[in-house]
Figure 1 (cartoon, rainbow, N blue to C red):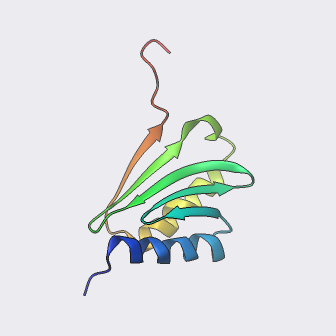
Figure 2 (tube, rainbow, N blue to C red; figure 1 turned 30 degrees about the vertical axis):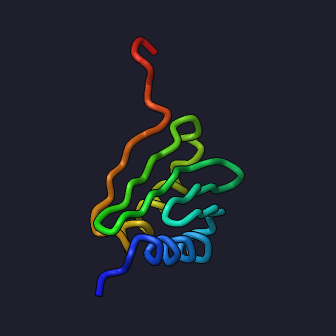
Length: 92
């Protein structure tokens, strides 16, 4: 039987914290993922996919943490959609 979104999110939270060293704040199936005191991304878990919203302001500083995050999320999410936030403003 496939995992529900909240159960998958709970497992992902444990993996991110114990194996990845991330600080994770979770509410139901959505998470704020931090590393070294900086926001790395938000992660939203659905039954058939995960949405990883990568925090743009610290992208350079979070490069290694982001690669580790991607690898760990791929273990429990067969489909991962990524986007960068905040989105760039036109002309900026």
